[in-house]
Image 1 (tube, one colour):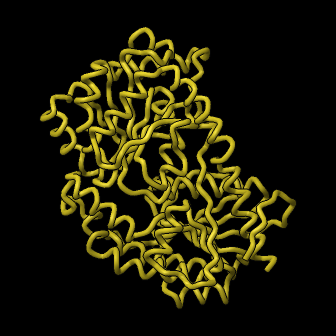
Image 2 (cartoon, rainbow, N blue to C red):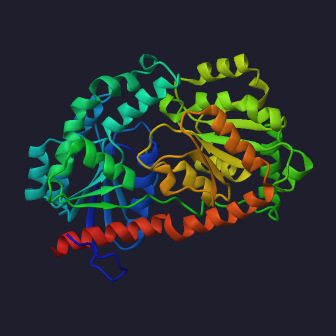
Image 3 (cartoon, rainbow, N blue to C red):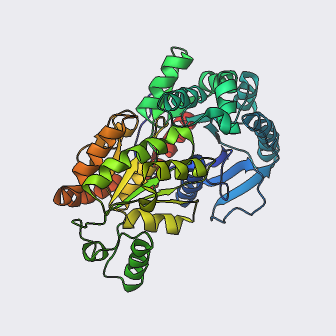
Amino acid sequence: MNFKWWSAVVLSMHIAMVSGEYPPRWGGIGSVVFHLAGHLAQRGHDVTVITRTHNQPAPHQPGVSVLNVPWLKAPMAFTRSYGKHALTELRRLHQVKPVDVVHTLLPLVSWTAKEYLWVEEHVAPVVSALNGSWIGEREGMKLAAKHNESATWKNPNDLAILLTGGYYAKYEQAGVEHSSVSVAISDSTRQEFERWYRPPEDWHCETVLYGVDHRVFRPINHDHEEEQLAYEALRTTYDAADDSALCGHPDTKTPLLLAVGRLVARKGHRTLLRSMPSILKEHPGARLVIIGRGHMRKTLMRQAKRLGIAHAVHIQPGMSFEQLALHFRAADLVVYPSYYEGQGLIPLEALASGTPVVTVDQAPLTEMIDEEVGGLFTCGDPDDLARAVNHSLHHPDKRTEQMQKGRQRVLDRFTYEHNAEAYEAIYTSLLDD
C-alpha cells in the first residue's frame, strides 16, 4: 500500500482512538493521544477517545469526546481487561454514531486476533500505533540490570513485564497481523517488530515519529517580566543562579542539568548519578534536577549521599505541563540516559524549549538527536556520559547554536501539526482503498 503524504481537503471522519492513557492519566501515550486528538479535531474530524476510568474528569477539547471504561487494576493484566471493555464500548459507539477509523495505541490495549478481525469486519479499518513493545521493555530492563540500575523485583510493574512480557506480546502480534496498517513511532521500533514479531510479508507499516507541543515547550523570553521572574526563582531554588545564569547567558558557572522520566530502572538515573562526581569535578557549581514519579526516589537519594553529591541533586515528583515546560526552558542542558525507548519525547520537548540534549548513542534517540543539537554518549557508561556533559558545558557558544538549531528541527519535523496531517493521510488512504 503506497500512502500519499499530502495536504488536501478531505471529508470529515469519525475516528475512535482506543488508548489506555488519556489525561488526567498522563504518560507518553496519554500526552500524544491528547494532542493528536485535539489537532485532528481542529482539522474538522470528530474524535472519540475510549480510555480507562479515572477519578478526575478529562480536560475538555472541542471536537473530542471521551468515553471511560472499567479496568482491572493489576500490572499487565489491565491491558486485557481494559481491551475487552473498550471493545464493548466501541461496539456500542458504532451503533450510535458510525466509526470510520479505529486507531489503537499498542501495547496498552490487548485484543486477540479474533477481536481485531471482528472490528475490521463489523466496525472500521484498524490503524495500530506501535509505541514500543513488551519484548523491548523487557530487554531494556535486562540491559539496565546489567548496569546495576535497580532490582526489578522492587517494582511490581517491572516484575510483571519481566515475567509476562512474552505472554502479552501475543496481543501485539495480533495487532501487527490483523490491523489494516501499523504505524511505528520510530524506525527503531519498526525494526524491532520485524525482528521479534516476524510480521507477514504483506505487512503494511509506516513510520511517524511523534511531535511535541511547540507552543507549550518554547524558549525562555527574558524580556517578559513575569516569565523572567519565574525563571530567576526556579534557578535560585536549585542554587544555580550566578549572574550569567540569571541573565540567560550560556557561560554560567552554575549550570542547571535536567533529567525527566519515570523513576524506574530503564530510565538510567543511577548511571546519571554515577557520572555526577566527574561533572562536578570540572563544574563544581553544576546542579542536577531529576523530575519523575516512581519507586526509586529513596534509592537515588541514598546513592547521591554515598557519592557525596547530594548537595547538587534535587528529585522532584511529576508536575503540571506549565511547570515542566518552565524547567525545560530554564535548564542549560537536558540529559536523557534511557536504556530503552519506543521513541522518547523528552529530548524533543527539550529541543522545542531551546535546550540542547545529551543522550545515548543508540536508536531511536539518534533519529532525533545528533551533534548538531546536542551530544551523544555510550549507553550505560557514566564516564562517557560525564565526558559528553562536560564537553557541552565547556563550549557555551556551541550550545547557543544548538539551542537555535534544535528548536528549528522540532518546528520543521516534530510537531503535532505534522502528526495530524500524516495520520489523516493514512486514514484517508485506507478509506479510499
